[in-house]
Amino acid sequence: FTINALYYDIEDFSVLDYANGMQDLREGRLRLLGDPEQRYREDPVRMLRAVRFAGKLGFLIEEQTEAPIERLSGLLQEVPSARLYEEVLKLFLGGSALETFEKLRHYGLFSRLFPATEEALSHEEHDFPITFVNRGLSNTDQRIREEKPVTPAFLFAVLLWEPVRRLAGQYMEEGLAAVPALQDAGREVLSAQNQLVSIPKRFGYPMRDIWQLQPRFENRAGKRPQRLITHPKFRAAYDFLLLRAEAGETDSELAAWWTDFQKENASPQPEPTEQKRRRRRRRRRKPDGEDKPVDG
View (tube, rainbow, N blue to C red):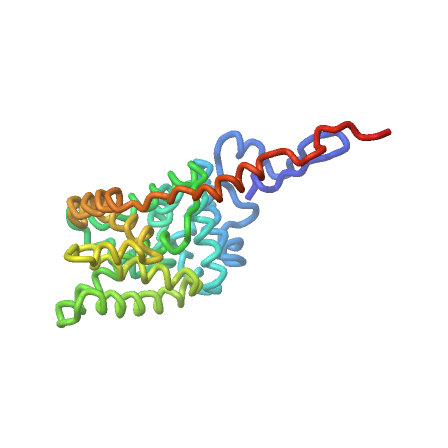
């Protein structure tokens, strides 16, 4: 892009601009160097980068740079799935996930990365499931602005939830229980997704935990809630439940119940014993001789 083709001269502290990049930068315009179609054919990932820069910087994609994108979007299938995984992280973990998502769909690129999700999004009922995805991406942007950690497992769990949910629903209609249905659906959707965007197993397993814990939130009898909150992925699954409730997919009363349950069952930090208190006081004291002047 022309805005990347700027050079800094350390001798006279000047900017060397051979491609009119400064003007494009001032006018908020993304323009490829050379013939756009040729550049995209050389490296199809440039289409994703154009969208990423446009979403993150709020720039417009110049007309000739923009024109071939949708027509050439199928070239992404030639890109190794592991490389596309890295590009997806850049697209959605840069602080402008929601804007980027909308642009990816506009240019026909999202369907090349997440075809099952794109197909599921075409079955909207009362703005769902698009509301769920939008809220998930908006929350991701908010956490990044607040410098809070964001795990790819949660991001991909959001992006793939609707195809998993719909497939699990089909399995349940065939007589399978909720958790096994989600297990089978999650395994099938992830297997297909990995052919396009290869999600590492260290994130794939937590994603499936998040999905499979969702039905367990509905069973609040006996000691089941107490056992559930000890699950290693409870917090991520609970946040996922809140997102579903906000989007109108599940009852908000259920999410509120679990919020209250956690408050009521929060484990207080044990008071330190007197022996531990004494050790802490000794550690805080200055060592003998610390304030004495040095000889000489």
